[in-house]
Length: 125
Image (cartoon, rainbow, N blue to C red; front, side):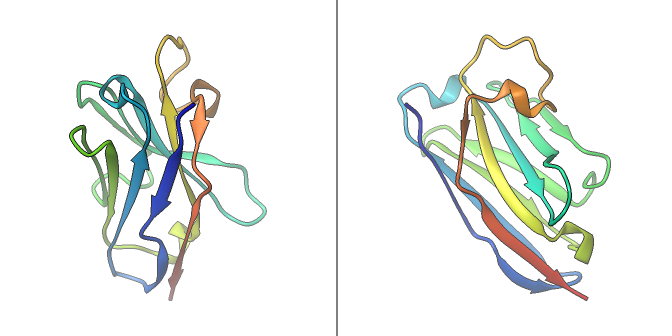
C-alpha cells in the first residue's frame, strides 16, 4: 500500500506563488508515474500535471508556463510549483500515483492507483 501526503496549500492572492509537496511511502517510488489533479466546487476532478518515472512531464493547457512539476526520488517526493496564480486555480489539489502497468493516458484519473487526501488552494482576487 502506498500512502500519499500532500502539503503546501493555503490562501494566497492573485499573482502569488505556492509550492505543493506530495510525500509518498513505498520503496519503488522512482518507478511511479505521479500526477496532480484538482477539483473545484461543483466541478469534476481535472488533470493538472504529470511526471513519468524518467522525468517526462505533461501539463494541462490551463497551467502551461505557470506550473512546474518535479520529483526528488531520493526523498520520495513530488512537487508542484505554481506561479501567477489566478482565482480560477482555486481548488482542492490531489496527488496521485500510478505504480505502473496501466495503458491509460497520464491525463486520465483512472490510471492512478493511489490518491492523497488533498490540499486546499484558494486564490483571492
